[in-house]
Amino acid sequence: MDAISSKQQDRRLFLHRGAVHSLVVLYRASLTARGWQTPTYIRMLHRSATRIQALVRGHFGRVYAKWFRDELTRAAAMVQRVWRGKLGKKMWRALMEERQQLRRVQEEGDRAALIAQKQTAHHALEAFERETQHAVVLQRWFQTLKNRQIFREARELRAREAHTRAGDKVAELLRLSTGSVVFQARVWRDCVDRKAELVALEEDECVAMEKEIEQLKEACLEAHAGSTQASRELVELTKRKSEFERSRTQRKRATETVKQRIQPFAVQAKQLTVESARESNANRQLQMELRRVRTELRKFHTNLRGRLVMEPLLLTGDVESLLAGLTGQDMSDNEDDTS
Image 1: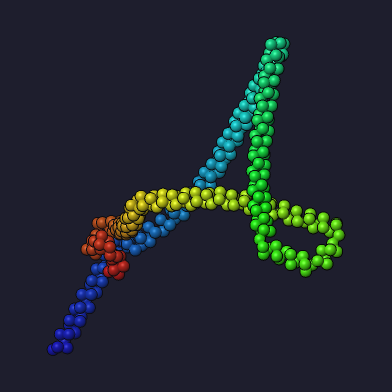
Image 2 (image 1 turned 120 degrees about the vertical axis):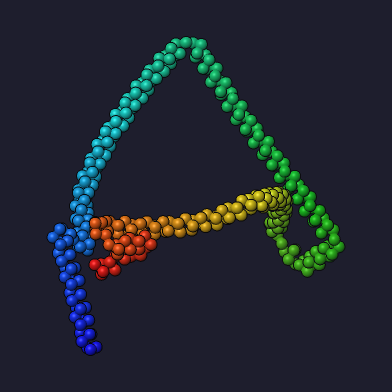
């Protein structure tokens, strides 16, 4: 009995499935007869039409862009040619006006000079002005030469005073050194030891030795005067160095004061930089979220356009697919498998 009942159930299930399949085939045949097409075929047609339109529009767009570029180039060339011609004419007109103005000015100057030359008083005035200018120039030269002479005399006076002081000092040193008993004894001993050489010296050699001694004295005087001048210059340089150090200290203090004054502004600038970075990151995140929302909205509109074609035959799966598009899920593949 169980076997008979199972066979009957299988037969009933087979007949039921055959009937369902027949109904589906007949329903689809009726829809095809009424001009209905599958959503997949419709989407394929839409994609093909979109592709064809894009190609055609791209071709016409390129043709239009090339034509528009050529027109712009031609218009730019024409504008440049007209503008350069206008500038050339303007420059030529300005040059001619300037030449005419120069000619008029020259003619007026010549006429005025001719009239002035005919007036005797004018000539006398010019002669007086020339003499006055010459006198001024001579006075300037005289003052310059006088100042130079005064400066030269002052410099020579300082040099003579330095030389005199050096001579006095050297003479004092020689007096002190030669007045010493030890020095006199040393000289006496050297003279005794070298008596034969001193007796054998000739008058020319003695004169040459005296000249050499005088030269050595002069060299000592020059060296002492130079050392005095150098010490004076060293004092001046020391004063300038102290002034420079004082100025540098003042500048350093001023710099420190300025740094202390701008320190709050630097801290505030750092805080503003940190806040700006935070705002930039937040803005970037908002832009990413906005792009994601726009992408989901485009997907929703795409699913909506794909479903609204079947509006008279809208099924439950289509509604679920639209709702899934709103929630960010993709149900198109499942719907295709179900259909």
